[in-house]
Length: 244
Image 1: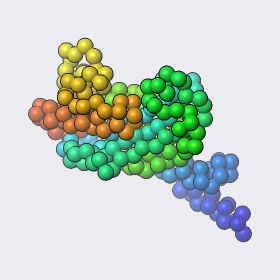
Image 2 (image 1 turned 90 degrees about the horizontal axis):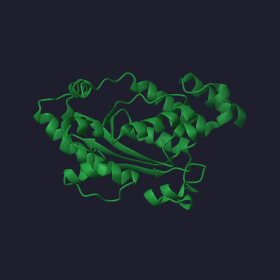
Image 3 (image 1 turned 90 degrees about the vertical axis):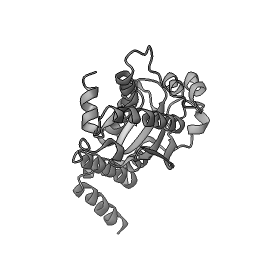
Image 4 (image 1 turned 45 degrees about the horizontal axis):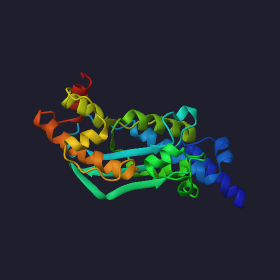
């Protein structure tokens, strides 16, 4: 009877468009359900267009990842996720996400020193599939913002493909690209120097949640300047950024 229930559960996942019965049987029920959720959430995201939404009204998730290095195609892994929700331009400090991830490999000494995340800290952390499932549930269908987002997007795409055979469909705004548009004369666009120039206190750098909170404050400053230029929708902003 238990075996029949398990087969029925797997077949339900298959009908939802999540996973094939063969993959489900290999992964096991929990991982198969997590994969089905990620695949379904990603598919639903394709149906949403935020381009006509006024920037002031956007629900946003500002996020950051810490990783073991810079090349996810050469063995580097995510070791933590951090994120915070913004609504109507306000940072919702009671709506945050943070989790360590067990990378199933040693964290290099330089990364331990940079992030404060040790091999002992991640030893009992959840695996990538579990955290990725929870992260995708947290972000929902909101717009994403990150600083120097190419790094984070690359790792997310590799993680999504490895666990669920999908790529990220969410739109991402990059505060570095916005800074380059607003202040083309600057010599550098690292997060630290942009935070300093905006008078935002630097607290807990290279902690994924703290970096997310500081990037959210940076976005608040930039949003005011963007609106002053009579750029009111996400589509308008993308159009201006595409020219620079």
